[in-house]
Length: 389
Ligand code: MLT
Figure (cartoon, rainbow, N blue to C red):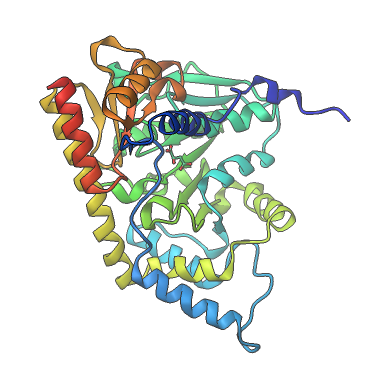
């Protein structure tokens, strides 16, 4: 047996596991302190009524001989793919059903998609970045090159045509920075990828937070994107499915063999998302579901505004908070990211995510999320004001 030595090139533990461990240690030592968690981007509002009703109905169907279902199609039931197709249509994107693949979330598919690519591809990733893009490539032994996102480009780096790339990661609205590309900027990435015959792996997990017509929800709103992009989306943040697990990946047929290869990969290594979950997901796209999830999204958006407003009052530089549940701030008093993490936990019992955990350009920055309850977010902001206003 020869184990995969590429794992030796990874950080010892996944960022959010490290944070959870540190917070656990703190709460064990300080059981009487109220810790407010604005770290991992995990939702707190429950699933909406339309989803729950649909799931209850599906549970009942599973207990009746005539409506019981065993294995489903690996790429998802037609009813859900049709609902996703309709959602794209609202953004003026036409997709065929066999270009849509239902998944158990964007994170899994972002890692799994690498099965389709040779080890020797050159990978280009923005820094700071969602660690999954980097780690999954490192696990496969690929060398990862970085493009700098920083205060100078508002954390929205644009392609440098002198740099060659085969696989390019773009996440907009961005995790971790919350910044979002407008149509003109995203077109630069599409043109660059097409000119290099490269592929963009476009993570649109946060598209539901977009509040402006200038910012595309899907990369396919950009001309010629179907010849260079695979898109990953998720119901985790959109509809509170972080624990329920459901997302979708779009592999356009214009990408040639990749569409059939992905189907081959999924039929071999995946048995599909549970029927009950897919029925719940279908309900998200109904009129009722859309208006119910909007209530929750507006709740998080209100939190984001409050965080952004508080940071402004404290004179703390930040981006995000608009079109995104994330707020990316410069650590006050030139503190390093992990130093600020400890400071905030010790002095205000607030948990955030150290920017350094997302790459070298994240050093000196910090991420807060708007996914907490309004009461906790407001209390956290009062604590921040006491320290910095
Ligand atoms: C985050 O906090 O960055 C997200 O929860 C990551 C994820 O969706 O996996």
